[in-house]
Image (cartoon, rainbow, N blue to C red; front, side, top):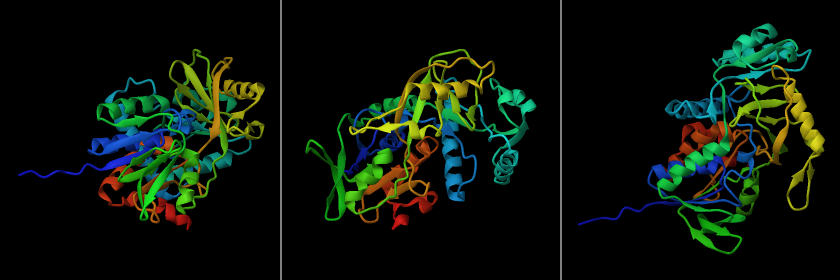
Length: 373
């Protein structure tokens, strides 16, 4: 006598780190997974993220705790192969503009009060803490967080997708815009722009800044505060930088291939949106960001942009993550957050658990979509 065990079928909309991570965790637990991308993998926010792994600065305690758990999962992955050039833990260095030394000191004190490893440094101590930085760029003081790191999300997505395929996941690239199919009030699959319908027992919407628009037809409103941002990758050069830098005019981190990744927000007004959904920015503004970054590096080497990507940076309206099942539409889950890189692994793990067991994880209690209602 035998009994058949039903294998749950989950459709995941979104080929960024949140969608891919959740898909892999679902497969590890024995689910059948269909992963659909509007275009390619990591083609949106995950492909243009500075992806700084941290919980620095001020935020709510639940958000801080979730980010700390997120960094922990990356440390586990790092420990399995410390030689990877796309995942590093060499610290983060932050400073404010001239005349704001008190604010920098207050930030470090706040972090230490939360037991977050935070060290207030004067400029003369920076070289000993982290190499490759031009200490003369620091006006008064800086905060060094030695436990922080960075990840190249496109490389991480490729790494996870190798496991996705080995576990039998089904991938549909360039599927166009997908919508959630609802039957008798419950999510039962996804429909593509072509009209093709894929049945599923549960659906995860992890479309970055487009997530609120995908769930809006379901009667769920998620405020969207996503700005337009840019990530620049430089041409290869010799440099000694190891830490992530967060400064008044440029944010920067190392990147595989002896390149550097750069971003900031001061040039948002220079970005032009077009009717076809694309964006552009004057080349001289991109070079200006590179010039600002050069001032931060020891020896001030000339930095030349090799490529840049522009698009919306996913940020919920209140700044906090939106994670979990929609009460209005059982079986439909969402993953929408500014900290997609830091939360990528832990959010995928916890969401997969909720999807398969129906048990809500306590660490996601304050991040439910219904808080906006």
